[in-house]
Image (tube, rainbow, N blue to C red):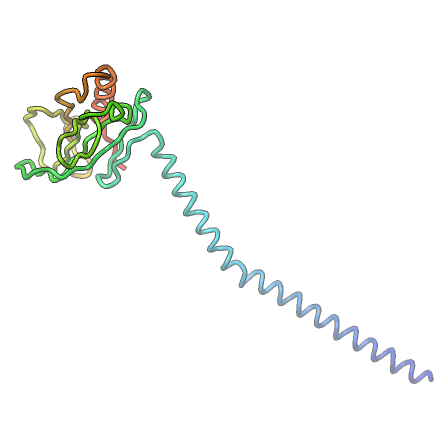
Amino acid sequence: MLKNLHKQNGSSLLVVIIILAVAILGALGYVVWSNYIAPKTTQNHTTQATTAQTNNQTNDLNKGYLVLEDWGVKFKIPDSLTDIKSYKLTAASNSKGITDYYEFTTQRVEDLGGQCAGSTSNGSVIRLDSLDRTQTKQDEFASTAPANDNEPIANYYYYVSGGQSTCADQGTDIQTQDRNAIYTMLLSPIAL
C-alpha cells in the first residue's frame, strides 16, 4: 500500500507539473500576443487619432480666418465682420492673366435682398468686394489696390477692388461698413 501511495504522489506531482507547464506556456503565449500582435491594431488607432488631432490643429490655426485653400491664402477676419461669404467666378479673357476671381459679401447684406442676394451666374448681383490674382505684377491700378504691398505670395500678385455701388437702398450703412472691413481685410493676405 505504501508503494501505491508513492505512485499516486508521483502521478499527482506529474499532473501538477503538466498543469504548471500549460499555464506557463499560456502566459508566455499571451505576453507574445499582447506585445507583438495586438500593438499593430493599437498603432492603427493611434495613427487615426493623430491624423484627426492634426486636422483639428489645422482647423484651430485657421480659426478666425477666411481661407481660400485653392489659392493657398487666408485673411484675418476683423471682429466687426460675421458670416462672410465668398463666390469664385471665372474671369473673362484678359491681358492681365486673371483666370478666376473671388467676390465677397456678408450674410447680413445678402439678407437685404434684391441685387444684394442671389445667383452670381448672370452677373446681376452686386458684391461688396472682389479679389483677383495674377502671376503678372501690375504697376498701374485703375480700380484695384495691390494687396500685400504688391509683393507676390507663392508667385501670385493679389489685387482688391471695392464695390462700385450699393446693392439696395435700405441698409446702406451696413453695406458700407461691411465693404470697408472686407476691403481692408483683403489687403493683407497670408500664405497657408
